[in-house]
Length: 362
Image (cartoon, rainbow, N blue to C red; front, side, top):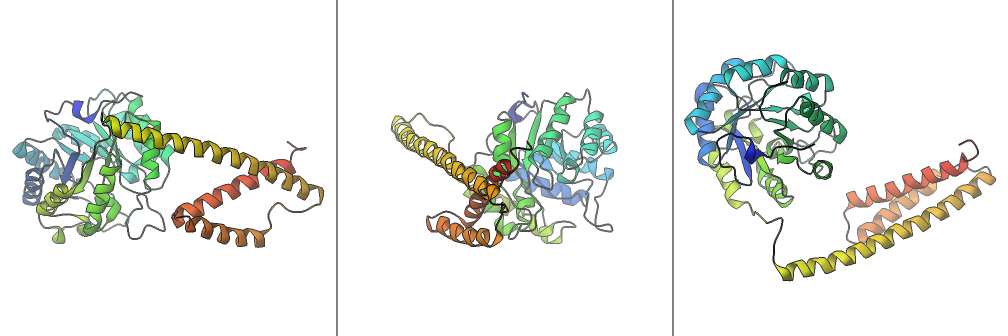
């Protein structure tokens, strides 16, 4: 797939990295939208956002002002000479947003998770030349995220971008949604032309954490940020804790450290190449060692098969898991990595022994 980059979306803006999308979580009143967006624009926003329809977890929560808020965000865009974007969750939203002249659409996490909904919206956009930004699904499923992107691409939309807003999992604290940076990084590997925006507001759920997450996104060379900005966030009708006042948004941006992804410095490049050669050598050695280990695992599986012993001995697994995780941590690696590393080796060992046990059947 070949995507059109944000700077080439034809929106009449001279976009510079990092792209900044800002504005209130929800459109509440015309005054609130105009003031919040004006404040965001003064701090460097390049696109203005506001939630018009709000998919909420429970009924009787504020579910958005509805289509009467569309003229408010359009007026904010006209006043600040910036393009505007809203979330759409069904074909009726698409129809109303297009009729109002919205410049960019985004697909929310609760919609991305549903292929029927994403296809309905994609079908409604057949023949329409409008940029679409697609948030990751609520659950950590990269194929579902790519599937949604493919549906819009299949509808002829080439002006596409992804939005990383974190994932809802049981261990999300201190974040509202766990960043799981490895997933957007993998998305970038699979779709290298696709630009990715980070949404620190939804990842954090707490405005105090936004600077940290925004900086991490920049260090990973994300294309930009979507940050919820409200003229009076403590009085917001939705997601008050994760919204910033315009001045606070400006402080976050001012303190960002922006690093280059490439350089022509010959000394740096020579040093980096030397270190990468060392890394490549170690990676080859690790791969060879793992292959030797699995040969021993096969022998263990054959021994167990010949003696009528089960593949798994839980008491031993519990013991070695704790010991080897501790040994990995002692080498300076994180507990999260240590657990995943040891678990992955064990899972492959179980697969290899299962293959040996069932060789005659297979």
